[in-house]
Image (cartoon, rainbow, N blue to C red; front, side):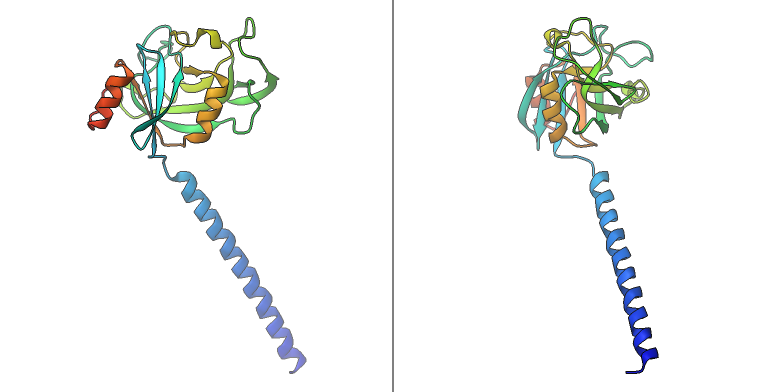
Length: 208
C-alpha cells in the first residue's frame, strides 16, 4: 500500500473514532437529561395538617409514615404570611445529596456547620431540602416563598405546628425520604386525616 493511501486511511480512522466518541457522549448526555427530566409519578406525599403526619405512597400504596411540623400560623399562601400552602404541589428541586446528617443550609447552600438534634437555641434548615412548587391557584406562591420539606434540629417539636411555612422532618427521616422520592412527585397538604385522604386518593378524588 502506498504511504499516501495508508496515511489517508489512518486519518479517516481517527476522524471516524472521534465522531463515534462524540456521538456516544451526546447520546449518554441525552439519556441522562431525559432520566433527570422524567417526573416521579410513582410516589406521592400526603400531609395531614390536623394529625401533623405525612405518608409516602408508592403506586398508591402507603409505604412510610413520618411525624412532621407544618406552620404554627396555619394554612395559606399569602407572601410573608409564614403559613404552609394547602393543596397539591410538586417537588421542584432536591438539594443536599450526600451531605452529613445535621448539615446547616443557608440560602440552599451548606455552611459547613453540622448541628445535632435539639441543639439548644438553633432553628436552621438542615440535612436535606425538597423545594416545592405550587400546582394550584391556592399555592401558586409556594416556590417563590421558598417552601421546603426539610430537616429540623428542633425534633422535639415535631408533631405540633411549629414552622414558619415549611414542612419540617427529623433529619434521619428527610434523608431517607430524599433518597426514595424524585423531582416531580406530588405533595398534597390537606385538612383531612391520613385515613380520609388515602381513601380519597384510592377513589381517584384527592381533596385539598
